[in-house]
Length: 218
Image (cartoon, rainbow, N blue to C red; front, side, top):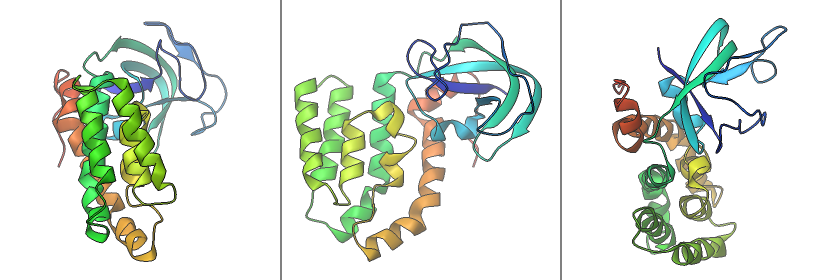
């Protein structure tokens, strides 16, 4: 199985802040413990949970712990960067994730177009149709709905999409606006995660997985 790791720019770990070096092994000592001691890597189905600026194919060796959304390994090294994952594909993927759950919000507030508008702005920025100022204005519009269920969908799609795609964009698209909406979101949460993972394999990020010969799982 091909394994991966999302990193920040220039091979920096997003949490441990470790500076990786291409092709150089990193080893950990002591007992492996998930989230406490070890090196975390992703299986293809885990990618949507950990999205960040750069995606690297990893080689591992030694002991492995299985986690629900990652593996914890004794030793690993980055082999090469997956070049088809970049700012543009991250923004487009995030917009897709946000739009996929937008129907939950719009079923309760059909006249509020702010989330849809900012998702559109995020896509237009990604393909070069609007500039950063226009995108910032769209994000500012989203921030006028603080405490509103539109906030996270709109703000994440317009903001730091490389990181938001796996988290706030789709998970909190409905948010804690009211009891009925929150209940609808609770029901839809697992399905949204499954959709994100499938989408990651089928479209934007599918190109980055497809070049490695990884097929979507049902």
